[in-house]
Length: 381
Image (cartoon, rainbow, N blue to C red; front, side, top):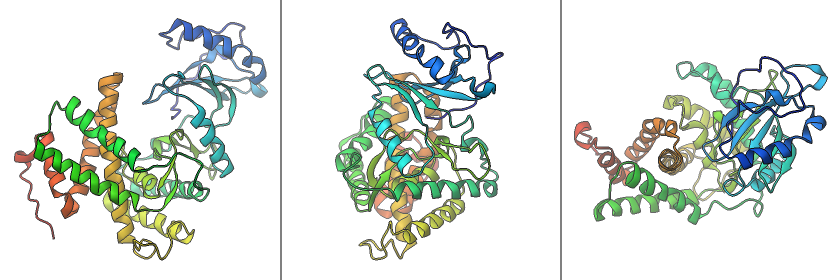
């Protein structure tokens, strides 16, 4: 859930009607329900209905609209409307995690109004610029401070963790996510049916990935913690805004740091990634999130921790490949699959680094049709 900039309306004029011509409503019944829901909120929140316009679309079935307010007669102040059809995108988890994050001291949207039955929600607006928009892959030195602030925000969230509150990121969920890769990316997007040998390679790799990822300490996991979902504070030095948190779970501490630094939409040199990761690891260790005497030795060995982050990132990118293929083929949103080369690079790089994943690396090249052309040598020390 991000709120990229949208052009301001030509005039901010309060009206009694709800002119939503700039917003597409393919379902007339839902449009009517929305207008009926919004009408009594206009006075309470000083909304300017003529300003209603798209803010952003989500990879899911939810979308966001921006509407200006007349608070203090100051143009530019606004709220966000979430439009989430309840049969496709129930909002109860959003409300639960929003409360947890507020309790942890994170900057998240305030919930100003919520129609649970119809899936409409009025939220405070955290701004129009994501941190992603401040980053230039050619200038990592300028990105450094943003990533330090992001990892501090992540640690603040993780320190609030406790079991029994959020769904558990368990083996069943890990395997359901991994299954998206063969089901959607391989079979439906690439049109490939794996033979018995190839399927055995994939099964073996999945077993190893799941085992690695279940061996780590559990914390609250945002599950899509990346710069597109962090908002630039309105004033320098303020906290980053956090969005798109409704899928949060209780699971591997390595997940969100892998998501942040192995982003599906921007890539960094490995030296930069290691630098940020080791500083996060040091802070997490000092905060007691890892434990100096953990069975894996992460509390004293960054190399072991980094290996675990890589294996977690491998799971995430196999999943993302499947999700992006599904969004393209099922939901008609092809722009996401355009980033496939980035996360396939992550998959290859990790698989090629570890001897036990060599067969998976070869299988990826078979799926992509690059095995002969690239002429990989798979020897490792």
